[in-house]
Length: 503
Image 1 (cartoon, rainbow, N blue to C red):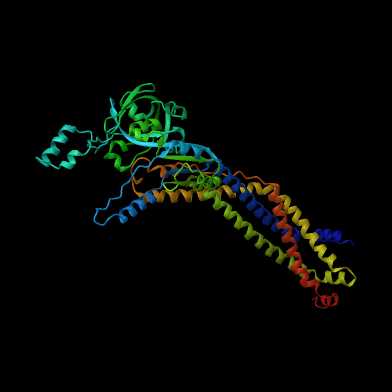
Image 2 (image 1 turned 90 degrees about the horizontal axis):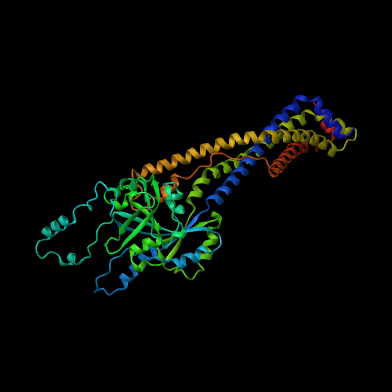
């Protein structure tokens, strides 16, 4: 009798055993295919997030090198000469050099930053509770003179008379891609944003609270002054934004750190306030990558641009948002990969034990068939046909049901990972304490950006042909292993030995 026909008759005669094999094989296949589809969905979500979020690279002065240079200069100076203390020096980068980097490959966009402080002229800033700079300057000056007495410190009297600023001026190329707007901390509520077409124009975006306090609206004009009151600029309000930034503790002492007193202007306006030395320069430039994977390639090409003094400036890559978003995704992908390994090994062992027990029960049948001249290869072929028929049925059931299983399991795992990541972020924030952003304009950008990062809340599970082929390959491998191992142990004996040992 043909061994294939014999296999089918055997399966029909042993329905209970066949159903048990089908049940076990189906569970194994469903788990393996679910693991592969979750992995594929996680990888796809990670790639989409990477392309969507990209990454950014900041060009700014290398403060560490700056301090080291000052230290060397101080050490090498004559010992009889008093050493020069370290200073935090402003070292702007030229706009032309910054734009050359923007022309490199993989740059999807860029922004230029030039920040300073200014005085409000003709309107009132939002006062900070402990800021004493708004008190009467004449009385303060008089009090100071009385404290110094006649012939007070001549050095102090020669110092330039500066007035503490009450506005933080954020000069940008494009306000829509400014860090706080991208993070969602600031949102435009009326008027228009500042764009590259506004470079050279005297326009401004002010915060809603500041606008309401002074009854200002889009189209109105305001004036700001430099801290030495030598430069005054009249600005037309182009847009009004609303901020959710709570500011730092230092904002209670200095009005210009108050988030409501931050105004956005084209970087050329900020340079005007700074003075003529700041013309055609910016404090830093941020380049937005088309893909976070291209950050290294961009940095490599950027270092070849001679217009930038790389002994003074450096590039800082930032893909924290991307890393935070894909963290739970990577954990889910890693878990599903481990599931595939564990289920494959466990499934192979369970099926091998099951088939081994069944083959041992059929030793007499094998002994008789071998005694009447049946080949050993055909006996193994019969067992393989029996298990492969079960495997094919299991593949079909797994192909239909794995999508639903993977969707439920994948989303559940992702939810757990997101909750864990949120708890970790919350714990870190609490450890910083209230207002623990560190103070200072822009120093809380990183945490704000992190807290506003959107989560990937679900996986798009799709059973692909590639996943099916991988599951089929593993399933066939399990079928061969589960048949060959026990068969070799039995069929290495001759028919007489098999039959004489049969109880």
